Length: 277
View 1 (cartoon, rainbow, N blue to C red):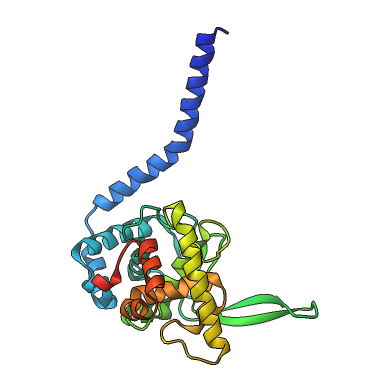
View 2: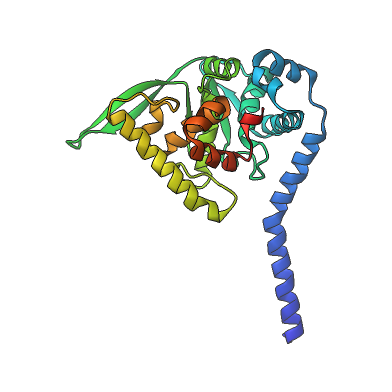
């Protein structure tokens, strides 16, 4: 084979490989663009009006973003009812609306590892195998309001979804919490270090969050009550990220006042400023 034909053949192979890699991405972008161009259903607007008072406080441009994100999430993510829970448009829209807050101004995608949202009527029981200091394993049962699995499932209690949407200022929102875990799990095992968009931001992120995490653990060890951040955040770095995400969106003024450096990191991560809402 001549040099010319060899180079031409390699160019064709490279182009085919590029098309194979880019094709699904381009197709997804095209499909989402079509979905976002569709009118937002009036019945869905009514769900937001009745169930999510925080939506009305958003600036108009962010309201539009949330609505477009809802359309894509509802179209792409299967919702499955468990333990008798019926999946309606109200369920899909209210979960997607709260999850959409985490996507504002972020170009990173739509929780790319999430394959299913499982919704229970209320708290659900999970079983865990837990080892002790003697090396023995025992089964434990816990009632949970939400859980995020790295395998692509996210579990929610509908009662807690409703409660989180109805009270947007208490710092507790199971949808924000569990979808924050999904963002964290996009890079592998959840460790409190989600995609930040810029490589040079990780060193500062780790420095600030490590210091804040250690300070919270120190407060609890001394028997002090943290003024803003819920003690559950001290469990591990992944829970710290998810819990602080709840405070960031629901109690931004308190978080910014008590932890300005931490608030600034989350504002960079989520590319929005809830203080302006």
